[in-house]
Length: 294
Image (cartoon, rainbow, N blue to C red; front, side, top):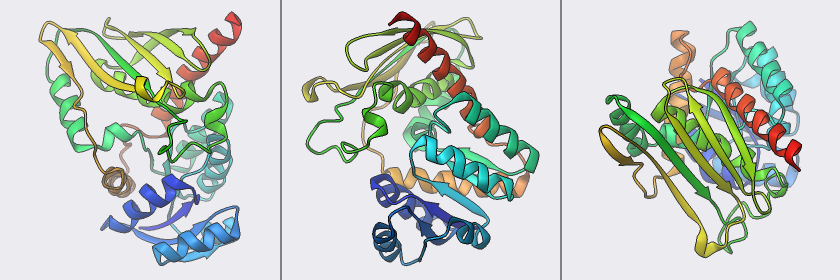
């Protein structure tokens, strides 16, 4: 399957490009970016063609992988879906509920395949953990802490404008948190959001299974206080998601291969744009509560 890459930032260079090139089922055709110089540099590193015209890129590919901010992704993915291109999306799929629903509707109308790159869903150790949790019954609750330090000297995303908005933690690490909680405890029915200092957000979540879970999210924790942990508890005991580094380009390679498989089979992927839109619904509900409390 012929892919185009949209975006020239750190995530595109470190993850998307290498993952696309490593996927046996994919051929990376070219790169589009807003800055011609950056586009040419990334395309040269990946040994593919730089595109200055997005429409021209779309004409050359079967699928598009996006590594751009949510607002940009929503409009460009909608354009790609309208001409029948399969979608490999970043989370969140959009930064507004209307845009997410419009994209999901267009993908359904066109009958195209989609995958949203919720990172843990494509990491081998995480997948094994989620499968082991799902194989057992009796879980009563779960938790996740995603307290990142965007201002740490070695953070490659420190200059990301959209992450520096006050809603950044909810909309950046929040999708991962909700995806992981659903992978462990099943679909979410509703949530309650409470804001803390800066972008700190606490979520209390209720699942269809009757289990409840919590999430604590921030992008601006002190570097020494940065903390990531996800787990469940219940009748089987306590289980914690394994900690450790897994190469993101390998996870993205798997996402690429599973998008191709979904396109060939016609079967929806478990974390497709419809799932991504459900996550946006939950984020929007949390944001509405936070805004009302201010």
